Amino acid sequence: MNQNDVITISVIAGDGIGPEVVSEGLKVLEAGMGNAKLNIVPVDLGADRWLRTGEVLPDAELQQLAQSDAILLGAVGAAPGSKQIPSGLLERNLLLKLRFTFDQYINLRPSKLYPGAKTPLADWVVAQGPIDFVVIREGTEGLYCGNGGAVRVDTPQEIANEVSVNTAYGVERVVADAFSRALTRGGKVTLVHKHNVLVNAGGLWNRIFQRYSQQHPEVETDYLHIDAATIAMVQNPQRFDVIVTDNLFGDIITDLAGAITGGIGLAASANINAAGVFPSMFEPVHGSAPDIAGLGIADPTATILSTALMLQHLGYTEAAARIEAAVDADISERGDTKRTTSEIGDAIASRL
Ligand code: IPM
Ligand code: MN
Image (cartoon, rainbow, N blue to C red; front, side, top):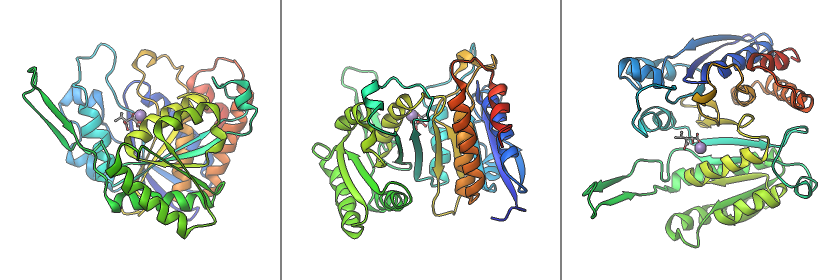
């Protein structure tokens, strides 16, 4: 893309702290874009929309999202005091529906312990060296497909199934992405799975991983079962560069990864359709945090870093690096000062 392009970004600010963090994300994006122009299109979706109209993802909104260059999402989830939203409704019919419909198969979640960020890790662990890895979580398959059912519900004989879907096509494209990302980073990929128990799915993942490993001797490879990976993440996270894993293992391990690298307020993510056929979606890993919504105290850093991932994906590599550097500088100086959401946004934007 050229610096004179107009980039159309659909913005689902969503619920709770979503609108607060998104407005800081957009502030920083505007400041960091250089000459490129943003065409921001707000898209009203989430719990509030459902409570008002009973609609989760109408066709008109889906069309708008499909036409954009990228999607920025704040957070979706019920507001305080609102009537109960059925568990899974927004997750399945909005968030996951978007990831699936737009075939966002690379769920990219970087984890970097910025100097100055707080970590619950022991000093001896931090002293081992910089912590800087990315998790590539498969985004369209696994246990997230909704491939299941239940019979005799609510009886003592109830049977409930959730079947994990793993296709050679789906696994290969994330493994390929992991190997090519490793070449632009530290040159190492770790497969995380549980192939000693999940012999069918794990076998498929492992065989494809081994094939890529043989084809790419320049990339160092490693394997950990998911349980052992949680130990490594708190005792020796420096061993990771690129982690590739399935949808549910990736969900779990990226919460842990966020927790050890400054907390959920800093954790950014990208849902990428690497084939470029559909728009990709960028969102903080955190949720709508209704308990602190409206107080102006949410940390917008995760959303700001997600905008950097967006620029990176759209090919604005330098602008993305500038935003990341501004965040890095802000984190290293923030100490224990309490700042409002917009003060953090202003401080980061003013460095651009
Ligand atoms: C995440 C979230 C989602 C997921 C939920 C809200 C469906 O936990 O983005 O990590 O499980 O993917
Ligand atoms: Mn999660």
